[in-house]
Length: 193
Length: 193
Image 1 (cartoon, rainbow over the protein chains, first blue to last red):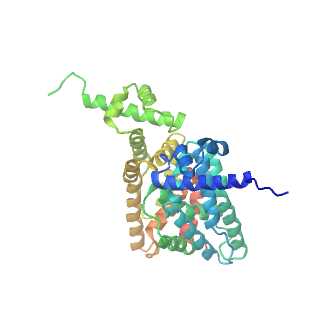
Image 2 (cartoon, helix red, strand yellow):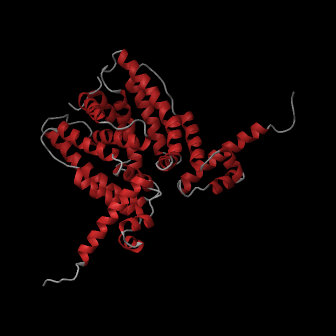
Image 3 (cartoon, rainbow over the protein chains, first blue to last red):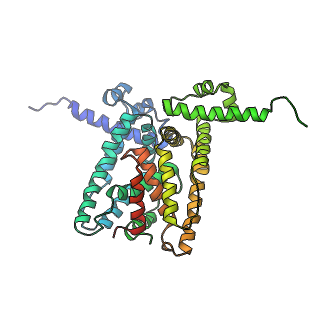
């Protein structure tokens, strides 16, 4: 049965996308703390209540926006060459963390998560864990095929390569640059000795 | 010339120490956000105005408390054995990040610094840079003496080893454990291949 009335699910999807886009834009322009639900609603052309009906907090909206951006950018692939797969993924992550749009969303979310355990768990589940699980499997396959040492610790590999990038974003020791990816992979694969 | 009147500098030093101790204790008990300047003043037995006279913000008080804790714990030493020096320093940092007293201060400070550029710069200068500079020099000496490869990138080594620990604290992929230090040093020194 067709209808000429607007489909409420499609209308909702349009509002949802407008809210997520407004959230990213306002956090990028004003910073996470100053991008209020009120301003997001105004920019998206919806009522504040629409946002509160769908999400429990600004953190939850920002997390959904981040999660959707990740889905379009990050490409988990097994090409059979671990170092090439890591390099490609690390470039994607460096680009996201360094982007003036998504970088401030990630900084704001991790900051907010330090005093919001539910947001911290949701960020871990939606953003960090999918990558963590992919790399665990990918590293295990590289160990089975003999591409890398079977006794190297996968947790350590993942946290060293990706932790360095988050550390730079959050603590500002130095900006993340594409050359650092090769420097990090050189140490991880060839060792300092 | 001696005097039997109380020394105002000594009295200030006693209040300063009481304020720093109260700041660490309250952040540990309540979390960074809920530890107010008012509660810190009350616990330390001083007036709110005393705190505002000496520090511009709660972040500044917390940063001074962290910086003094670091000074008593972290031991920069050159034993001539780079891996042993790194292992000792990484154990100290793991213990600090994982402590129920100082861990929440570091989490709260890094969170607050994401929306407070002055606090971010002060944290970088007081907490991160002294270690960063020590390890740059230490790694350069290990490269000159041939202990490690001369072409390995010092920035990458530092950010990989210490970034992984901060990543675990802030994103909670897994708790930091002493065994991870050996796993990370094994990869960094011996390589995955």
